[in-house]
Image (cartoon, rainbow, N blue to C red; front, side, top):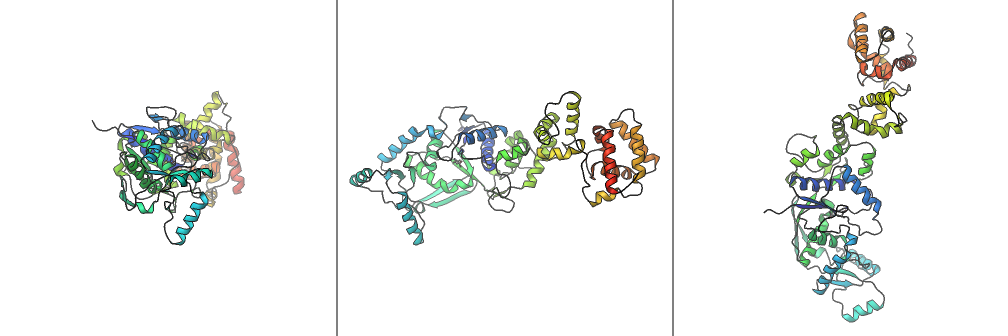
Length: 490
Ligand code: GLU
């Protein structure tokens, strides 16, 4: 029987859930789902100052929103819990006792000031700052003296000298580190809480993780973790470090470039399908040309072999385009739900509408579905149905109304529309035809000035769709307004 694939996402709940974290979670999730494996969600909450329950909730909510579930972990439980590191202190303690008893780890009584002094001295000598092992071989008397002074010890792992540590990385190949550059590092802090590099190894081992897929930022931690695997006699998992995410200027992605939290994108009206698709492409490429895919399709296609080594560039325009493509594919009811909070915020609806008014709103909102890349853009695409306040988009648009035939077009259209028993798509279309044929004009000579006079723009939804929604009263008002602005009398 082949071994079951077990992956984990192990966030530290210390702030807003970053898109980089979402990308790591997604690659793990895709791998688990592709290979019929298990996904574990473990919360690494050992940073007591910065971890908050709100952040944990935010991470879980964002994962769910993005459509990622987990088979074991916080909330859902599982055979290898608990899944909060702070609830596992007893477990770590047992392993630490073993390391201490075997002489693989030792108590260190150095104060932060002493450590800082050592660091500075090494830096001055042009050497790599690291712990030089002052407390490695303390006598029982020395220990007793420190204890009597009230010093609280940390626990350090003995790092062997002159060892080559090789990270066999699925994405980057073999990456070599030298143990001499590491120095005995702290595995348990003086408050009894394990450090990340220590707890992560025990947890990944006890949770039977087979593949550790995480961000490249952690590659430099991996040799330390391998030393812990070695000291504890654990078999190491497969590692895969996925590339950094850079901003469009090729520097590390940060707030300077734009929003970095999943929540910020959700609030702007990006949709999970779009964001997932975009995140999947940050470092992974499907084998074909296809750029737009669903989560199911990504699961089918996903493989770590197609995860690239070079940095992924966060291209905001591409995100918008991809999200827009997924918006086009939404069911109209879902698009309406996406629009709702933005429309309420713009004051264009209350959310309490019923009957005819609700039907009208639905039709109005539907006109935006082909035009926007994310939800926050919806109100501006429909504001012509709610207000008569508008300007020409540019000089070119204003110039359209200066054409000689414009007064004739607008006058005849007005007459035709007013004569209609019912203003709907087909009847309005017929009016346009009549105006065009009756005055022997080209289609453009009719449609363009009407569009500009109505909206100030040269592009937008089909006029026969727009006019019935706008209603004749507003149509006339808007045309009058444009003409006044352009200094034209009918
Ligand atoms: N808690 C670590 C982080 O959020 C996990 C890193 C890992 O996946 O090993 O960066």
